[in-house]
Image 1 (tube, rainbow, N blue to C red):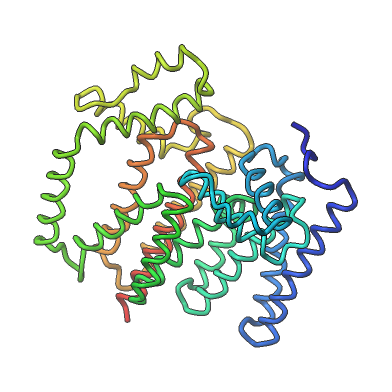
Image 2 (image 1 turned 90 degrees about the vertical axis):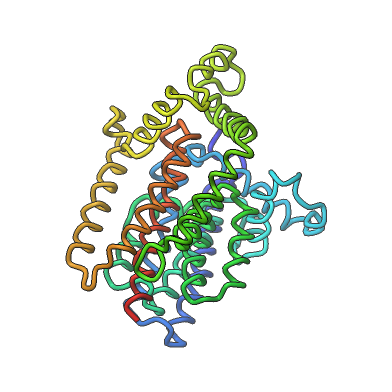
Amino acid sequence: MPSSWIEPIFPYSIIFNLATYFLLSTIFFILFYKKIINFNKLILCLFFLLSPFLFNGFLFEWSALPDQSKYLVNSLELRNNPQKILDGPAGYAGMKIYLPSILYAFSPIISLETYIGISLYNRALFLFTWIFFTKKKYLDDYNSIFFLLMPSLLLYTSVALRENLIIILMLWLVYFFYEKKFLYTLLVIFILALIKFQTLFIVAFFIIVSLVVKNNKINLINFLFVTLSLIVFFYSFSDFLIETINKYREGFFLEEYGSYQSISAKKNYNYFRLDFNYSSLLIIIFAFLDFITPPFLKGNTGILYFVQFIEAFTISVYLFLRIKFQKNFNKYIFFKWFCILLLSYLTYSIFIFNDGTILRYKVPIIFFTIFGYFANMKKELK
């Protein structure tokens, strides 16, 4: 499929994209005029708003992330014919495309015929969120720069995918939770459930661990209640759960190794099928190790995998130094967010086999837990 199958030809594409960039830039100038941001932040925002121009035609073609075409086509159709909104999505599965497409269709994007148009709007939404959390001190000086520079976050907030909306919503979830705005918290959870149901695993771990690790201690009553509830739940629905897990796990396996057509892949999955036995435990352990290991260390030596490896190393060093020199370090808060990270990784590792998909799922988890940890520390120190 050619890279220009839907986009207008040059120079119209660059004219449309620059027009969208300047229109969105106007909003940042208004924020500067209203003294919501200072001159330095204005320059930073205008500079980092350019990041979508790095992708979808420069560093790689849109086909490297082919799901972008779904949002582009649907949002363009909705803008051209708004009455299609009344048709609704094609079932629950279509909701994840339908809702973001509505947002993009009626946003200040000059042309919905280019991938960079939606990408610019996604990036602007992220920068507006970044401005808010820096103003509210939920991002300190170090973290504000950190959230702008990390390559994976830069990538997924600068392309025409729903991942940007998921990342933003998960940050807002943390904010509303710690500001005790529970109605907004529920609203965010509801929207997340509509556009990516899988994020509810992370939300559930966040809520459960928050109940257990509470007020700088392990709440034994809540711990016993959660443990007993989970035992009863898994015992009562064990057959249904293992069948459902294998259903979705097999889908990811065939997507990676058989494109849903290979008979041999279907047969080979039987060696990876999970059950309540020792061999399944080993499969889960190896899947988890594969999930947390950067592809570069698994022999994938491409430049993007090398960048991903350097980013993982940088994040580890950054967090180590921040925590090591952090005043009033709280071991309970650290333990809480470390558990949320591990449980989320473990859950997703059961299903995913593709390195690219692993990164796509890891990015919201990583930055949710980092943002959540420092937000939790901020509220604790008040």
